[in-house]
Amino acid sequence: MQKEQRPAVADWFTADDGQVRLKGTRCNDCGTPYFPKNTLACRNPKCTGTHDGTELVEYLFSTRGRIWSYADARYKPPAPYVSADPFVPYIVAAVELEVEQMVILGQVVRGLTVDDLAVGMPVELTVGTLYEDDDAEHTVWMWRPVND
Image (cartoon, rainbow, N blue to C red; front, side, top):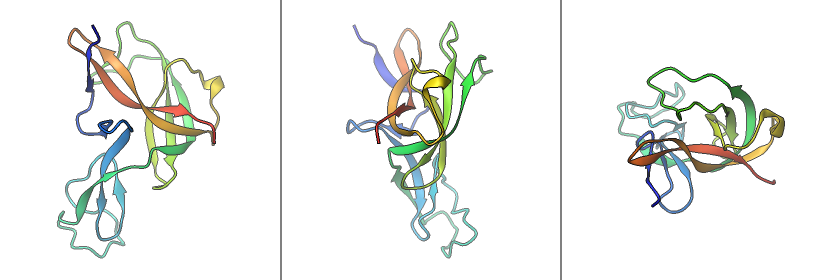
């Protein structure tokens, strides 16, 4: 029997419609996007809005970008981070999103090494398992290389 899939971090991404999207906010006045969600006020000093938090609206980020930087994570991160037991090394990539042109950090899909990646390589969002427990697979967004 397949385990239930649950987001490891609540409300940071969605895959409800079959497409993985990061969830954030965007200033309705100046268009500045925020990830993770910003619930206080627009932090853009050039924004002409009221800065009282009312101008922030939910926003779904674009799904593709290009690798800006990447690293091999070979040590088990300390708590509160939860990882698979036993720990399995993974790759982290900083990806500049096509539309928003901001950099978002995330793991790269399992099975790849740093030798498989390159700065500028196109990637897209997908969902992968961060860790499992008796009840569920706890999922996060991950980057997956794609053809341009």
